[in-house]
Length: 188
View 1 (cartoon, rainbow, N blue to C red):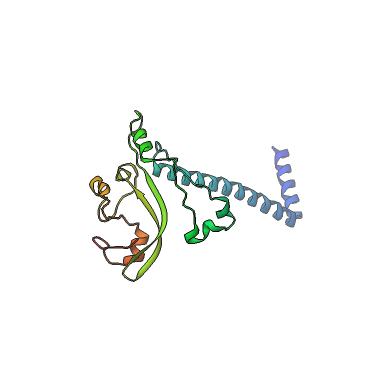
View 2: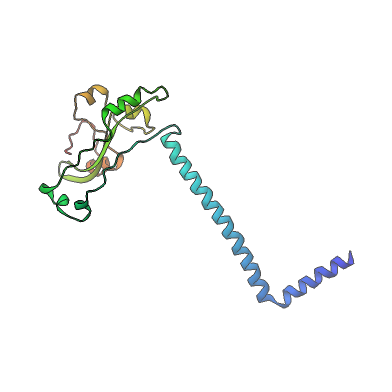
């Protein structure tokens, strides 16, 4: 036991005789441990964020997306970007018939098709650029988003191409401020 006490006092003397070295070593150890803890915490936080994003879509949801690559002229800033001379590219890789075929698969519970784009949306004298997401009413049964006020459009309105829209909270606030957007007419 006396040997252990001697070793302890010898260690204390060594630490106190070189205070700067002892302080810097201790600081290095503290910073190193704090960095490791922070990196692991950030990693776990990021993992949690990604998991929650995936859970929002549903763990059994599959997205199929078609993209049309720009033409060589469009990439080079040629005539494909210049208004009336632009070439229209028809998307022929995914059609409504494909959606109907997918609906008939035995392990599929729900399917909807959607088209996205960016358009100018206005109400009275307020104009905003908005992302437009056109989808069949089945979207509201499949996606987990909730409509705060108003209602989703139905299949009859979809088939009749009725002029109805579900606005996101940001665009509704931008266009209408604190006013109620229900039964108002917007221009797209």
